[in-house]
Length: 264
Image (cartoon, rainbow, N blue to C red; front, top):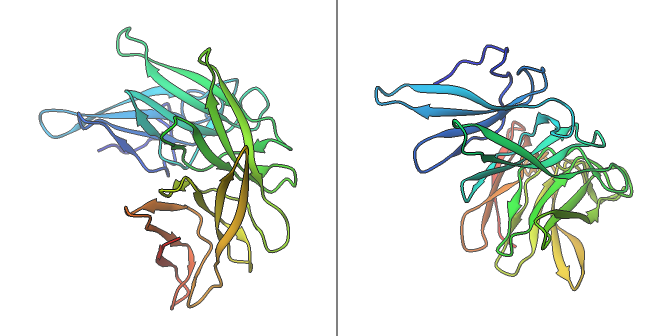
């Protein structure tokens, strides 16, 4: 469909892609582009079965951020939502919205929130989650009170701006830390994700339960390594009915990784 050349088109596209109803494919590359700081791209299907490629946005490293995250962008009401891991007003990454501006097929990036660094989050690697109320939630690898990552949430204000708050700061010890995970939600409104480190040393599945205006964290599973999984970097996906699936980089019977099912 497209072979990245490492120039203006970007390079190293490791994120999952997003498809719209017309078969367009959207994704991010963390490096390359006009400024060498990554791109957001589109692949458009043509009648002959091939695809045309174009860059929708080249990250500059300024307020628009840099280094598109490893998380898949969300397509919602014709707009793309995602995170840039670095850059932004404070150098700690951003959450963005990318929308068509109606002029010649151009797209415009708007920064919804710029992470401040500790005690706020820093470096959002994972994908975003929209809940039924329109909140956006995700995780950061660094930042928080203890500097080892957060879970955060953005709320839309009446004037159209967004406010960000930390739901939980990961702690040292047996708690998880350093999350690059997306979040998933069950039918009760609890959030679940994974940490790439912490727990018994091989990462965790964590749960965040709403408790009034705060959230309570618990650890329903600590990965133990073979024959259990180990290092669940990418988070989980919903299988419906409050059943979730994920994969680990290491662990499993042969120590080469595992696919797992998790039911709260």
